[in-house]
Amino acid sequence: MRRYGKNTDEDDIRSRPNRKGNRPRTNIRPKHEDALEGMVLTVDRGRLTCLVGDRIITAMKARELGRKAAVVGDRVGIVGNLSGDKDTLARIVRIEKRSSVLRRTADDDDPFERVVVANADRLAIVTALADPEPRPRLIDRCLVAAYDGGLEPLLVLTKSDLASPDELLEMYGALGVPYVVTTRDEFVDGRAAERVREHLVGRTTAFVGHSGVGKTTLVNALVPDEMRRSTGHVNAVTGRGRHTTTSALALPLGDDKGGWVIDTPGVRSFGLHHVDPSRVINAFPDLVPGTEGCPRACSHDEPECALDEWVAQGHADPARLYSLRRLLATRERREGD
Image 1 (cartoon, rainbow, N blue to C red):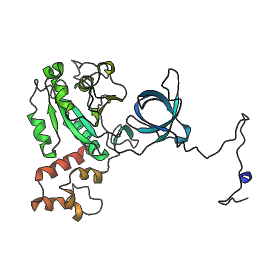
Image 2: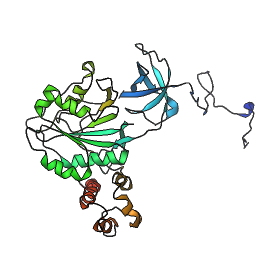
Image 3: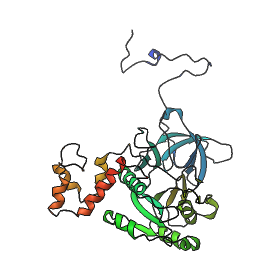
């Protein structure tokens, strides 16, 4: 069998026959150095809506990307018809390196992770204090996903006129997570949106939460009127909200200061099969030095963990270690526990 070296002549290259009689197939893919950069706004059945400059473009993924999928928030290279005219279609030929990734799995036993959002700076975790009841375990899981993916968390507590936020604020106080507490009246008159907006200016923020907590209502108050999404209600029998947001969508903040919000579908579970505990502790910089004496592959929740002695010597607040271990334990607990 003939061997080909590095310096082969063009005539030495064998191409596979093509039944259609057009150009032969090749493994060499174009570099598309002239591709323009765009941002993926939403994905729907293989069609991606992207922003290129000031134009909205419909595109599809090029074959050379293989199984690599673009998600909302991705920065991508696009070629083809970039006019944005009706019935035109461009091609995404490159997905740029991501600065952050929000991922989840169906459950903790599912090895197949799903990237929900890319390149977000912050994760706004929206939960109601009543109607429906808050689910701290789901909040914990969202926090772990944020820390693991490189996003800064923001806790948004709604419907404080129905129940006190004190218990939840005490639970998450040691984490130092910024928070906003709102009432139903503040949702109506716009005060809730303005207080949340202060944390979003100049950032890309993904919103997560289970259905019925007011997530999409809040997003609608933050974006221009013509971009608002439909909202649902809470079922009086089950206490659960109805899913009205079925796909993630990036929307610009409704002001001239810059920033994006990404509304995601309501979640009822947030699997963490993909999470590496060694990355979560990076969100606790005051505890990281104490891990130097930990055994290899330490889970940070075992008798040999060096963090216990580190904290006992007064190097860090015991509440911080407790909070870390509570978050790391979420993989062993279901959201409804």
